Length: 328
Picture (tube, one colour):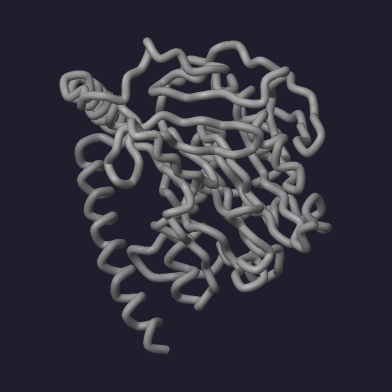
């Protein structure tokens, strides 16, 4: 039995993603990790998944009451910036846990405890630096780390929490930099998870090899044309519209091919042979076109230029911080 109790907090408002039942199946299999979902969807709690029903307005009211009355959060996606404040926001809810964290719903879990062991948890205060899955030690220092103040181009919470656009405060523009400056022990091994490229139709592993995904009895793997198998902590299929076959509660396995999850593999639907260059090319054009249109709508051309400049400044600043604190 694991020494470290973990709670994963997920605020999600609006229609749940089509893959939710499959996400739920993989989360339930990790019964030593508690998942707490704040949502306005009509779902019931199951085993280690606790549903707390509330509206988006109620959640943002809690942020204004417990964090700052100046917060700006016009839509649910903006809640990503507020994830690092979860330790303060839901302090009473987390009192019995050693670690709290957050995750996205556009992913599937493998065996969490196999990859994130007690030994790793004992030696580190933060696990991973990504927004799709991260854990924080449940201490005053880590819970209040989001309030630590850095200099430009690092985002501080007073800025990130009071502008309408997403600032990626939970990742590289905010919390990652604060961890470096404060000498926080962070465990980040990107070889443990697969973050599928959203601009390409095909699924490829870190070697660039075409694969499909299999979940079986809690084990999550990718398999290539040679039958070679790699096991993963989780697979994140960001920004994809996933079509899902009806989940079979009696089956303890399912497969995932590009943009489709079904209970079993049907070979005629997806071939691992060939490059599929034309399909990838068309898919990439649509992806980047949609992203440009969305960014223009959200930020304007001037806003996009400013954000790109700040991103470059963040990358330079991070290198400077790493050079300074690696010597201390």
